[in-house]
Amino acid sequence: MSSSSPSREAIVATARETTARGSKSFSLASRLFDRRTRERAWLLYAWCRACDDLADGQHMGGTLGEGGEIDRIRDLTDRALGGEWVGEASFDGLRLLCEEVPIPRALIDDHIAGFALDAEGWRPRTEADLIRYCHHVAGAVGEMMALVMGVPPEDADTMKSADDLGIAFQLANIARDVTEDAQGGRCYLPEEWLRELNLRSFRAQSRNGFSTALEANGEMDAVVTLTRRLADLSAQYEASAQVGARRLPFRSRWAVLAAAGIYGDIAREVARQGVAALDRRVVTSRRAKLGWVFRALKQAL
Image (cartoon, rainbow, N blue to C red):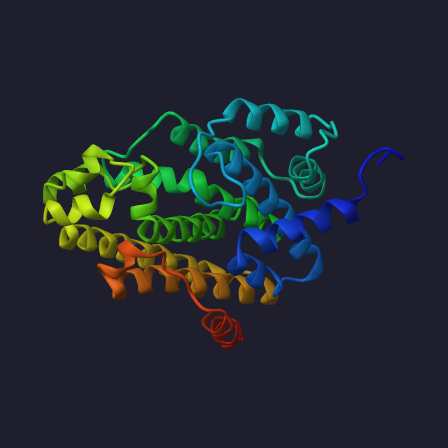
């Protein structure tokens, strides 16, 4: 680095703060990695968080805004990967990460493609469409995390498990955020699922009074059926990912199993709460998260 370039320590410190603010679950699980892996995980998360916020017009998540800054995401990413310090800590962090870990550009582009789908107002027609979307926005990140943890790119089985874990996480998020997404004009429930249960409220994609529309149309129970379907699908991908975790070094295995349990609890809680999960955002307590840290330690051993 030149004297005018940011220091690695400064970039990592900013990424650590971004991770702590953006995801308490990932922040907790990341502490289980060895120091170098942990720092690289923060760098990857910070870039993903920045892309997500630019795409959705948010800051550290929250209410969906106008967003759609896909060209800016691509420009900053291209410049950072081209060796330029762009002055945006999250993108400078991506440059630093890719200097230390051989992450294929195809995976980075795969992730950005998911944001582009959202910007285009895309909606899944089939369950396969939904899984492909989950791969873009989360599965590709799982594969990049596997590389950060030292998995050889030619280890197809472990890379597939990492993809599956990301997909499981995203399915849990979608199940939790059905109402929030609908109020923001989005729906990730496949059209074929909606047709099966004749769900009209989602087709209208009302930004206001979504729960009221469900009640008026007598559709609450049908939506609960679909959120539970998402939770079941998430559990299937989580189980696949846990098999792949066995091949990881001990501390990485511990972190991955803890994260799988913590995020899996989101889907399980959505399924358990039923209608109540449509009226308020499901969260897991710090005590529950810490419980998974200890359970994952036992599993990893």
